[in-house]
Amino acid sequence: MNPHPPDSLSHLTVNQYLKNHIRTVADWPARGVQFRDITPLLQDPKVFRVLIDAFVHRYMDKNLRPDVVAGLDARGFILGAVVAYELNVGFVPIRKKGKLPFTTVQETYELEYGSATVELHTDAVKAGDKVLLIDDLIATGGTMMAGKKLLEKLGASVMEGAAIVDLPELGGSAKLKASGLPLFTLLDFAGH
Image: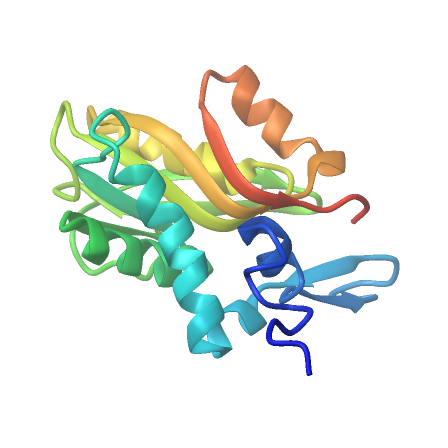
């Protein structure tokens, strides 16, 4: 019997291991789309720990350590809150319009068909805070760019954008990098 199953970390890189736990759903939410579903990463406690540790180990470095983690609605909340907890820093949610109860700043961005608006509480960050902005994946980059602009409106500095998955063919990561935002992603998937 093989002491190391084929999916064990001893035979795979962390990135390969995580990629093996992402489910591709064909034709969702629309025909022709290959949806990259990260929920299997969260369901298995070992896989979830490997995922979170990949981010935590990076941001424990004193040169990359944020003052606060900001998570984008909604899967960025899952990752961001746990990463912030492990780094012993605060967490702030960037929500879809109308979900935050206190005074907010807003940023509207374009979608393929229409637009969307995200909000952040005005007291979520302080001027000069170094912020890690996190989400589950980067597609067109619109949500992450809007989050970056919100944080900068309040005087914070977004030190890096982070995500599990980059879908480079959709152009979001290139657009974000061109804006001056450093990016860290664990995986990329060809196609969309």
